[in-house]
Image (cartoon, rainbow, N blue to C red; front, side):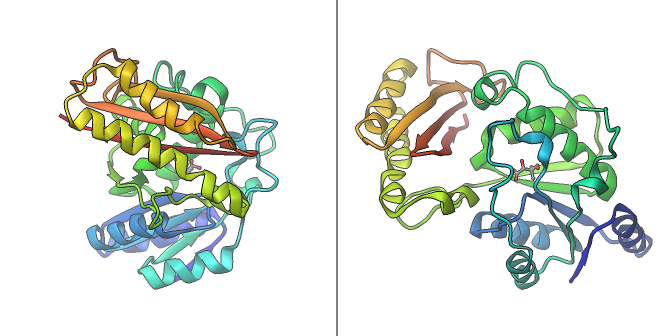
Length: 281
Ligand code: PAF
């Protein structure tokens, strides 16, 4: 496995693979990899001849008061995990390699990016769409892999690929959880022991909501109230949002009878965590 830092090196390697007729999978990440990322890499390795992992903390998807400076980074640990999982190349650029000082071209999206996380992170998805488009242009993969934990991101990227006719498949992969239910996240490392315990209110609330829907509850307001009550019962929690939306267009729904995404964003102390469940019908 090789680690490269320039776009030119990625292009040269992918060109050589293409000349051999090999297929290429891309796993875009911001590094500090955990078992969630590992499951994406493993899926790409299983479905493609070669796998590229991008490892880049993308500055333009962070708001001014967010955690860009403190976002955890450990390229040596990431490299070991990628190698062990069968990845072939890590693209680990500096910010200057991705963004020229006079960079001024962005990929933006209406509608899907305005609700859920977009409400409190108004420039986040513009940053995500821009960097992911750049990575797609640089690597030109056959398939790219994204986790369902960032469900809005997955929906946004699928829509971008459809709307802009990008020639690749987007593969969504299930949420990977700790044994006690907490969704794996690089940001879990910010949690103190007490906060780590408190963070279980997200999956507990969502489990209650899912069980109610599966038992036949179709009133979205009631399901939302159940999830909210469970999270609010935890003193260290502060809810950013609890929403139930149509999984196809991310618009709020009154009924849970169709394909739905139930999504939450909750501060545990200073750490903002997200989690969700999707029911597709
Ligand atoms: O999900 C992430 O880690 C990031 O948003 C992504 C897709 C790698 C873009 O920076």
